[in-house]
Length: 289
Image 1 (cartoon, helix red, strand yellow):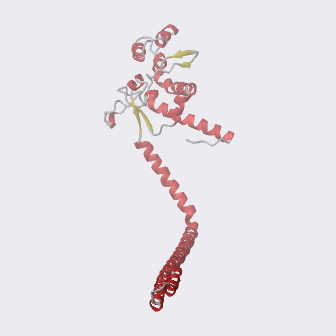
Image 2 (cartoon, helix red, strand yellow):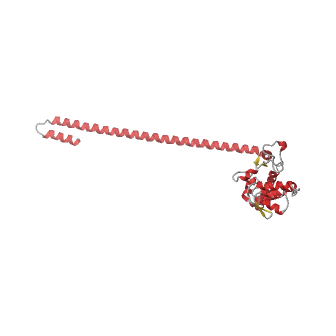
């Protein structure tokens, strides 16, 4: 535009018929307009630059403030942790003098609770549990099919072996051993006990012999032995027979049976546990009961 204004001024002076003064006025007006527009652009650019600077300053102030707040929070957290540590150390130091006495008292209470639980909590199982291999207590029943080796022969169940002790004679014992079921073996044993073939010392001798038989069984069938060791509490054989069992699940306390089978089974369990413990101690192997 400046070039245009100058050209216009020159033309006004050179072109005939034009007044030189009027041409110069127009040129000056054009120059003024150009100046005003240039200044306007400059002022806008300056204003934008100042806004940008203020925004940057504001962001910097915010960043500094956030950093200061984080530092303050970290200092407070560190102070709290230090105080908590000192308090815990003080509590530990204060109670250390009573630790042995408290430990002894806790051990005594734990033992009493264990004994109480052993008396109250136990496992009740029946002869029929052994007929269902899927039953959790099947392996405890003398009717459970195990094929245990005892006295040089395979015995299908513990019941077969027990009943063979109620009479005498090798042929008769073989007939009991090969009976088709534990119920059939029991019938042969009861018949012998009621006849001339009875073993009069049966009840006196059977408990000790049965314990050895059960220990042999669970040694031969290691997985079953592990299951037995894992049990706790009383082992109550719920059968109406008052010598072998409890007399039944619903029997009155005054009419309870001797639970001979359950007690012998529990004794075998404890002896197996002790043997396992001694073996672990001798070898230095950690033992989890």
